[in-house]
Image (tube, rainbow, N blue to C red; front, side):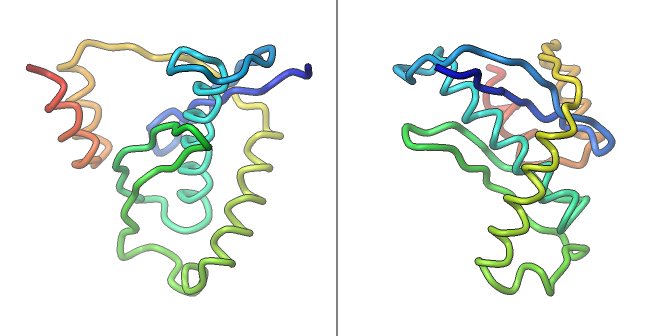
Length: 139
């Protein structure tokens, strides 16, 4: 029963990873620590993609799922086209970069804000898909 590390990515271009440790608890639902870890790893993957391939990556959704995590995103025209030519090279370099990010032990913070502030932040960050998701949640 080791310690699991949980990370969340700050969505600012110059942001950091937010860091917590948890004791292992098997994933049973969205409130489980494993679910939170998987969600957090999706954010680390995004930061790795931003560092390696495209600092102007446009984000979609990035949920935890029962057997892992994923994140939808769109590469801009500034993406490193040579590196993204093969799926294998993307996976290998992304995993290595994620490991580096974890070892950096960046600050870990949970951020909540009013919906209007979140909308404004997403506009400033140039994240139209995430802004659309945010708008859909505000009824």
